[in-house]
Length: 176
Ligand SMILES: [Zn+2]
Image 1 (tube, rainbow, N blue to C red):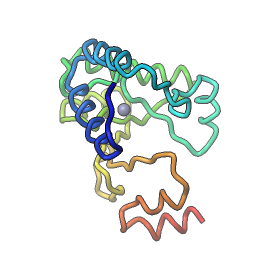
Image 2: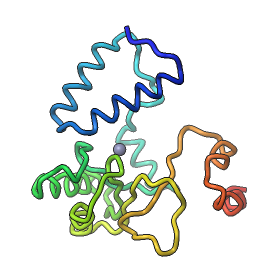
Image 3: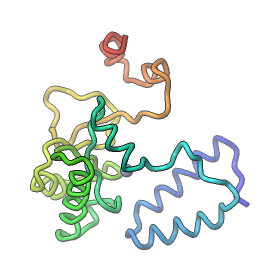
Image 4: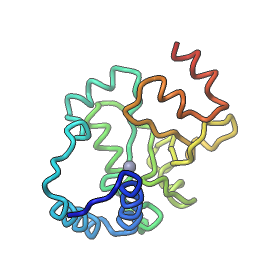
């Protein structure tokens, strides 16, 4: 059985995540299935399950923006042109079918992109795409390479504490 103290757990997670992101989708799924078998005995956290179709459709009426994120979550710069376009376009089409509205936003899996990937995203009609750069958006940012801030299952106080200092006053007044 794999055991690790909480500090080690994060390092183990990052090490595994780093290796998995380099794999082709098939090899990645095989490795994940293997790990799930090795780690059997720890039931999945129900709070981390994917949303149901009904839950996604209810979200579209709220304050959330739902965007595409590829079909199988590969590192896009690694893909050939046909597979690259299919990953982006299929994801967009599935989201549009699910929500019955046009999807214009996208997030690069792992934040990985290059000029070719950016151009493919633009070619599918997506107008906004997020990387994993952790900072607030600036007026001159490229709309197809925006930074974003990850948000966990936090309270509003935890969320405000996690923001970069330059955004705190503005955000606190917007939340209040
Ligand atoms: Zn992702």
